[in-house]
Length: 64
Image (cartoon, one colour):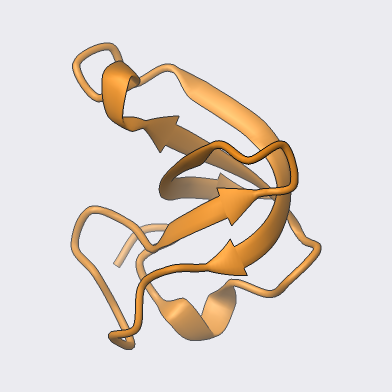
């Protein structure tokens, strides 16, 4: 599994890089702090879905 696919790895307040829905074709990453974890299952093949403190929602591709 690559970074961001396990829910247990993601913590509130951590800095992450997410792919927004509109950026899925380019893979462009948006960075910010995790405000809320939206995925309920323990893992997801495309990354755990989170809401950043900026309000943006996307799937985690990397964390710092």
